[in-house]
Length: 65
Image 1 (cartoon, rainbow, N blue to C red):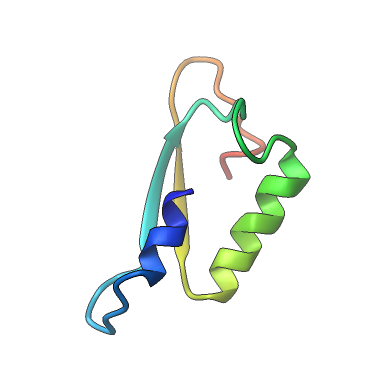
Image 2 (cartoon, one colour):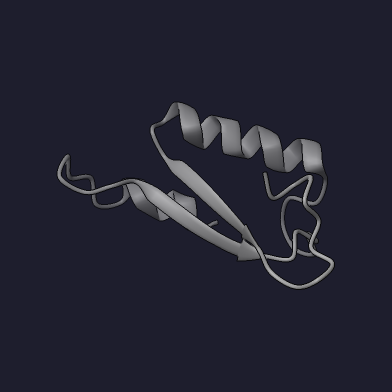
């Protein structure tokens, strides 16, 4: 997951923000909404902000919030 790279080069001047462009359909790695939301919460606790953007006409809005 790209969020793991945010801690690789720590610098207080840099933003820890990840933009996720997806249709919301998980097909690799974390697969359930619960697993994904838990991972997002853990990254948020570390100060990493994840901004999701839904792509496509039928993206899954529930997971992209």
